[in-house]
Image (cartoon, rainbow, N blue to C red; front, side, top):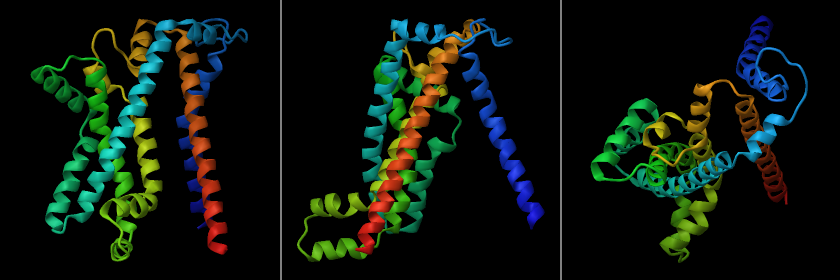
Length: 267
């Protein structure tokens, strides 16, 4: 048993090394004054200055954040009502069918999804740009949010809703004062997962972006194809640190909430 535990720790360490070594390599060379990824000659902030002086890049970053926030918020709202509808389906066969349809966009290859959206938008006449990217991100974010919200709804006892109705609560009160507070952790988890997927997505976005509109992932890909530039390293480092700050902040918020709930239960 001890040997198995040691091997497990070694395996976990190797996984973390494989995952994070390229990121730290990229981070370190973002401060390289030599301008290449081979020899580190000196420390400089030049590549970060280039990023912040690039007006076009800043606009693309703003576009990416707006798309991510809007698509995640809309997808989460739709996922809440979709999850409630799935839970309320009585026939198991119909419920399984809805769950299977929900999971199609998750298990399907991104390239197929992107090509499908491109064909769909071309047929119905939607111009490729902000609208097409937003609709695509909403579409693939909904199943992700549903998967995070649905387990919380399934954990909720139906007697809570019955008790609220017996006490004279309206359907709206049941939704806003009973269901939503209970599934709040799932809602936040679904929103942040959708936000992460939207910020990271490249394959789908690559198909549905048009001339004059781009997101960060597509822009980084375009610049990387043009040749190695350490401004890409600097930009990637900023995104990584920002994402890390969000994850750490979310973790501490959850920890504080758990402590407050623990104090409430004790009282």
